[in-house]
Image (tube, rainbow, N blue to C red; front, side, top):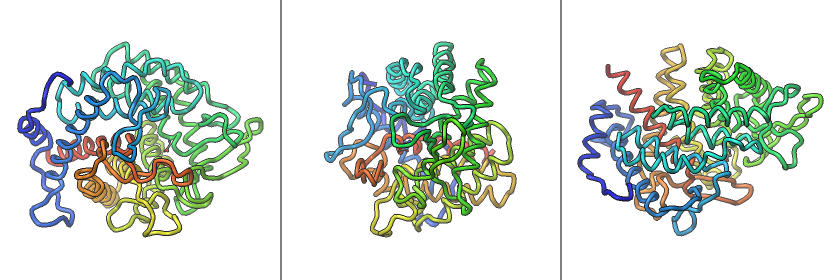
Length: 404
Ligand code: GLY
């Protein structure tokens, strides 16, 4: 990638033929359709990723969030976000088939290999599955397979059979914290159990999802961020928040992790309980969105509408809803979830959420890392970009299926 420039019209032609000519009109202005918005967004994203690859050069640190001047703040490979940049490059390769992105993705993925031994956080799942997991899916090879199997073994060391869950964090104020985000890391375990790892990895993932379903949800389908357990008895001792507005509010990215995570758990297990709970999480998320379908950082943030939006929550949910629409067995629900995902995508494909015209090195603007800590507020976040690109892939694949 560092040795070549894009041939813009060639790339556009490739994207056009990949997406096809499907026209989906969702209340956009005359002459606009989602296909053309998506095509423009893919081209824009590719240019941004290429620029980031150039700017970072031989850095051994990974982009995480943007600073005041729009440049990337970078972090070490053991940060929970390190897998997303290589993941973005793999997604862009998937969208364009441009080998320059595969070369860059391979290089940035390689720098994370040692993380396969990381047993200090549940984030080993995010780190390795977004990087090596995408690489293995798009370019299967034994090296990546062995790395992923080791990463799954590392993640499984954090499972406590009495609690029935993987411990999310160490060294925080809770005894045995399990955060809703942790649902995302189960995909690594499901994958490993199907690819040479022991069946216990599957059992651990199912146990974790079942306990999370039991203890993280409120009656209205919203979710707690943190549930802490007694590690000796397995009893729930606290239901609180870390990044949300209040213990009893619904942190929007947490809700998005629930939508995506339980949809994935249903895909992997065909356990109807997980489909039902994914739909409850989705119904809450969709039912509390503002008119442009991009949530505020917490659904109960006190000063709505004068609160920041979180595009990362929108992007995670958008990708999850596309998948949910393909798994639900009811035609009306299928359409409702797909339309909601498309409405979100319409917003994300244009300013102010697409960073076009801003100084940001990221693809999406207006995300929130942690409002209570006042860190990474109203910035670009690499995981927002990652799930946006995944949503574009899922949209493209869905349109191909519907059309043919
Ligand atoms: N998993 C951390 C976050 O969503 O901020």
